[in-house]
Length: 235
Image (cartoon, rainbow, N blue to C red):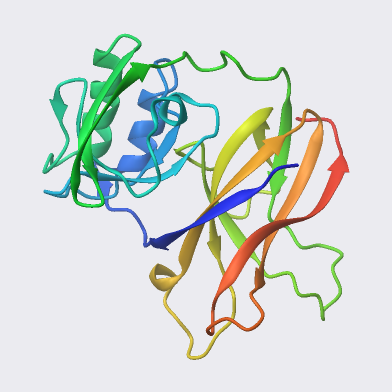
């Protein structure tokens, strides 16, 4: 199983709008439309644009050359920099392309222009589903595995934190994990860092994910990993 991860900025609790957060709005808006194939930070408006947090290998964003760290300023002619509702603005921009994808933004401070096409959800993916879990049941107390929260799957807000299983369509998927690696002093939840984790999900397989401290690295440095896989029917 190929696994890649990229460090992200610390993620706090997203702001709510009319009782819903932007990530949830974007997730529902993308359910029956074209998919970018990237996780984009839509927590708040920014005059610099929306930051790409992770790119799904083999997805539309990957095919046109979008990278983690790129800033999206315009998608399909719709401006995103400074929009007060970035999640709904991005969802509308993707839908407006009717399968086409035209991006203008910044990379390393320089202008960026990319174009290509998007696929409908489910096209080009394997049949069936697997499952993700962050449960640590059965591990000895001296285990090096630390707890994580599964917060996003393919750019959509995951089920409630602590859910025993998260069903995931088979194929290459981007997951956002939030760490709980102990370090003094005690920290607020908003200070815990998140990382993007790319997994190749096989049908009817459950992946147990966690975090492990990086030996020899600064206090709190960690990496996500799969510490166990089990054959289980996807429910």
